[in-house]
Amino acid sequence: MAGIVAATDNDIDIVGVAPEATLHAVKVIWGDGEGFESDLADGLVWTADRELDVANMSLGQTSPSEVVEDAMQYAVDRDVVLVASAGNRNGGAVTFPGGYDQDIAVSSISQEDELSNFSSVGPEVDICAPGGSRPPQPGDDVLSTRVDGGTFRLRGTSMAAPHVAGAAALLLAGGVDPGDVKSILQNSAEDLSLDAEEQGAGLLDIPAALGLATPTAVFTFAPTLPNEGETVTFDGSTSHVNGIDIVTYDWEFGDGTTESTSEPVIEHAYDDWGDFTVELTVTDEAGQTDTATEEIRINAFPIATFDVVTDPVVRDEPVTFDASDSVDPDGEIVSYEWDFGDGTAETTAEAAIEHTYETGGAMIVSLRVTDDDGASDDDISVHSETVVVHIQVAVTVKPGDDDARPINLRSESVVPVAVLHTSDFDSPAELDPDTVRVGASETVDGGDGAVPIHDGGHVDDVNNSGDADWHCHFATGDTGLSVGDSEVKLVGETVDGVPIFGFDDVRITGRA
Image (cartoon, rainbow, N blue to C red; front, top):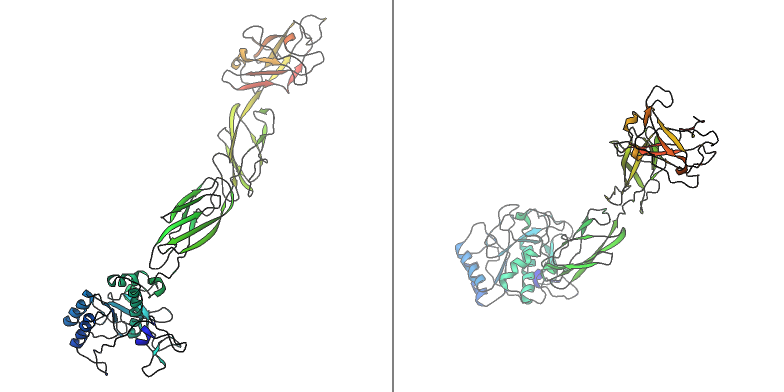
């Protein structure tokens, strides 16, 4: 035990835990390992009365002793740190004095960080330390010094306890209050993921207990593939340092922003997409630091837009929508979700699509695009346009009564225009005459169109089809039409706002 605690560094043999410690041999048992409880109690009192700092008790018995416990309390009250072996009862209960609250009870761990198969266990175990194994494994038993020189190996919780006693001596030498030694050793111990009755607080970690351990910075973030503007949660709570606390978390998010906090969890949102290097530096109570970095990719939202290729858009005729100008800055668009405004929707992997409307009127067409990372924003990934679906009707333009005037001569003459009854236009009574005009073709210079020269129109069978048609009179001078033109455009709407027009079915007739 003496060599484990305080063997000096002679470049030949082992070095003890506290090589500069002064040892005092207080004999309380005989050479055969037997002794009286009163001898142990006297030894504890003798130690306390001489103001010694640490008492290592690598001994034990199965039954408690009031006289020993009283002596232990006497020593603790006089600032003696007591360390005791937990016992070698092969998984049985902790022996005494290790079973008392006044000391630090030490169980034994093998070099594989497993409980030594001879070690006692129980709720009284406070900490564990190296103690070898049985049967011994090469290099597993604890190396110590002989009285007559040289070294040898032993196993047992009696070998584990002096490791803790030496650590206690180092803490006291550094000015630690005796009453804090036990908690510091336990708080700095390494968790071996064993049962608490086997390892106590964990494996003795002397550098951590002395504040020599450096912190380790670790962090995660969620979501793992955030989008621009999305809140990202960075969590540095898995950063750690044995024995003392991390007091500062300094973040660099890679986009030019930094923040320093005392809490490990923080939120940040990136305004731009791209790849960023996030850096976390943690600082512990001793001023020691460690830094961790992680790469984060901020996914760019796809940008939606589309063109209405077909012009004009006519009821019962296919309309082509083309979204090929939609883009994803850092990938590709994989989904085009269309809402055509008439209660129908369709999702495709292609940018262009056809749709046929069964009703006329203004339709709000909406497109949402989604990229190969599953990103889609309610603003820039969605594009909407109002598409006017027309009802097509037939238009007949007739000349005036004057035989000398050619057809549609630009003059003050009156030209009747008839909207013929067709299958696409259910009733001429649905037309609002005040909204119907005749306008010039785009290829004809002049003329902005004209309103009827009188309200209303005549409803009769203009083309002898057996159906009632609506027609009204316009002055040819206002139509912008010239001799030889074979095209007239009718623009108007029904009383419920559905646009109508005549274009493809225009017929120029002879004189009346």
